[in-house]
Length: 180
Image (cartoon, rainbow, N blue to C red):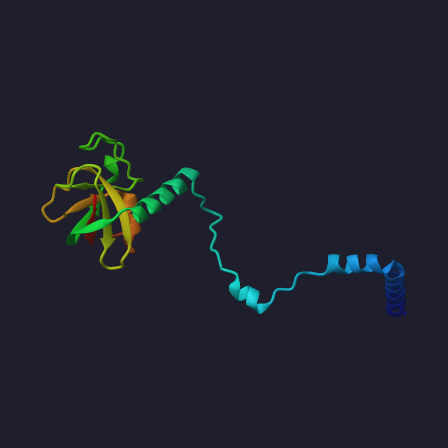
């Protein structure tokens, strides 16, 4: 008995709604239809829409983004000539962060800088990891490394961009110097 009443009430409400909708003028019905209609996406549109990965947890400060954009545009505008292949590279220890370098500037482990024994200060060097092909452009700001085996010491940020294994301490690289 209760079920029949619910069905009857539902039917009455449906009839009242449909009469009310159809009693409005045709222009209003068309507006309501367009308003309620959802945009249908075709398979072609889905394929054409690029997938973008966004990281909502970690956000970078604007200065970091500007620095990365500057380094990318700098790298695109520079021309490099081959300097050395199979060179050993490592990175600065954290204890040097904030200390003065041989060129007089303070060392920052978060910038793209490096130490080399012979190259002049201010020289831009493209360092390419020979194992995975990743490269980074650094500026020579210090002297070193003081080891016969190693050729260049990179800032930690530059080194971490080159390697796949973040626990490694050294890597074989190819060095290219800015062609002035």
